[in-house]
Length: 485
Ligand SMILES: Cc1cc2nc3c(=O)[nH]c(=O)nc-3n(C[C@H](O)[C@H](O)[C@H](O)COP(=O)(O)OP(=O)(O)OC[C@H]3O[C@@H](n4cnc5c(N)ncnc54)[C@H](O)[C@@H]3O)c2cc1C
Image 1 (cartoon, rainbow, N blue to C red):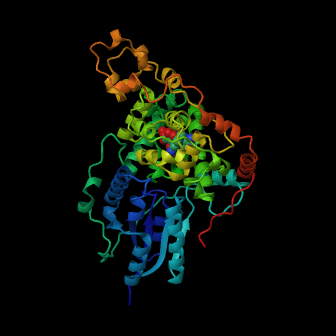
Image 2 (image 1 turned 30 degrees about the horizontal axis):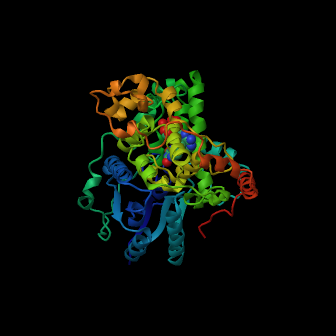
């Protein structure tokens, strides 16, 4: 007789509060284990990076610390999901697998489809719960707003745990940290991982950091403090969106400071809105949202691309953003948008050439937001305005004292502030005695920043029939809704 067991499969929901799969597993009154799978196909894919895996690993350690008193922990395995579930179901009688629905890229979607079939053939129930107000299988958004508000205002789950009396004796696929020793050394420049820190960031935002939320939102240095900085915790599920929403709404500060808090809450809704778009059609991972733009030909140039990735474009604010992002994993929205605009509009590169570089650098990488925002900023949706961010203008406006540039391009730190936005204006006298890298005197493209052929094409494409038709389709109807079976 095989031992009866349920499984809670954690993915982007690394927490113990407001967690429906854990709640239902407790309710089911059958022994259950909690698992996390480092899936080789997924962690080796071009959108993923070590910093994501480290964040996940340290979030799990945090869960394990808080569950220790219940003799529970997250069992970590290194295996593709299908292989793992195929095997464990041959050892134990698995009744139910509980998890959240995952709005992921193509490989996770097709993995889920395959797994769904496997589990049906084995008569195993897989219960997937809706996540952060994103609905699966819808073909219109008629009641979407209403449903989102119902979700964020519904009761937060108070997870309670019973003491576990079952010892899992299952060694296959076990994850051994010594084989992944680089997961241990979490860089202190990144936001600390786990639910405990997530709650600390939330409470410091509610109690004091919110004050300049709107004023500093686009300022590269100040926004690091005034923005909520909750994106990483939401992306890996250290916090549920409902928990964040209600913590803000129920706080004493909310009623007295509605403006900044309401701006923040509006963004929480955008978050679900973007993920919903991707849930409906994850081909956006590699195809233009407006497929009319597939016909646009970019000059593409490896030297330009490399200068962008390696922060050597010679435009101080661009290089500062890239250096900061690489080191810390975070940039504010405006600076992210400017990096994409510079790549696609001034360096004239196809968005696909940069999209995975940034997903790897963003500690808060969330496919549903990332691919749709990247395409919006690249100007290939056909329904949004094409925004070309001039980096010199942005630099002067958003970093007038060059505090951010000096911090992230230290080679320029000694230069007179007024010239830091445009170091190519330095004269021989200014340069005497200063060793500054050549690319700041001869940037990768002319600092005149004339309107490029690509930008002209992006605009003229909007008049074409197939781009217009696509725009109408995007605004009115969806593709066929995605369903697992
Ligand atoms: C090219 C590009 C790629 C991006 N990729 C990601 C990504 O992978 N993951 C990610 O979380 N955000 C992404 N964003 C959106 C945005 O830049 C970040 O959410 C924000 O900077 C995170 O900082 P914060 O938590 O302090 O945000 P806050 O300003 O405090 O906002 C609160 C929350 O609202 C959500 N949010 C804020 N702005 C947006 C937006 N424009 N669209 C959707 N949701 C939003 C986030 O969850 C954020 O945590 C991207 C933006 C661009 C331009």
